[in-house]
Length: 226
Image 1: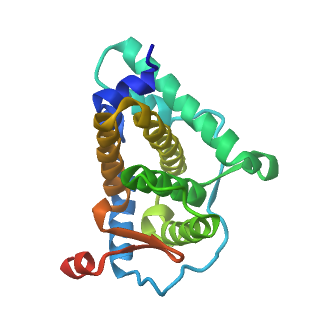
Image 2 (image 1 turned 180 degrees about the vertical axis):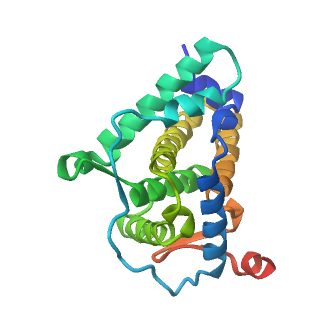
């Protein structure tokens, strides 16, 4: 019997509850879009302090993401439980030291994990080397932390932003793995979802993104056309 996630991957329904519109998301997308189109492959982001948030006692993103799904109350409750599990898996498997060290959540780490997971799903590539992932995290941390959008965001907006990145990064990574066993249609469904997630977060066509030792850049032809 297929799991809830397998059924959604097979049906191409991953993006149905992608992200409730939020002012912070819109403004961050504009900031990241502009910054990436100016980025040079030869310019590495500085390693600044981590961008952290006090860990909230109660998550807000699972219910908000689930509410965007079609279907009745049972379907939305099923999706809420899935999103809660993804958030728990992110913290336990990908960032187990955060709670032990500071009891904080790292926004830059969640952003890097989200982008890396979506690029991996999009291209069917291997996981990023640790050095490339560290540069990506430094780049995204710097861009988000220095943005006016982040400075002006309320605490609950920041919490929602972190949780969405953490949840959807795990979701797309698991979906990509499950799609391999479900066949080419499922793989293509996950690729389309990954494209949409990256465009929604970065404001850049995913096919134009390049990632290397100094983080993300945009293909020269695409950047010049902006």
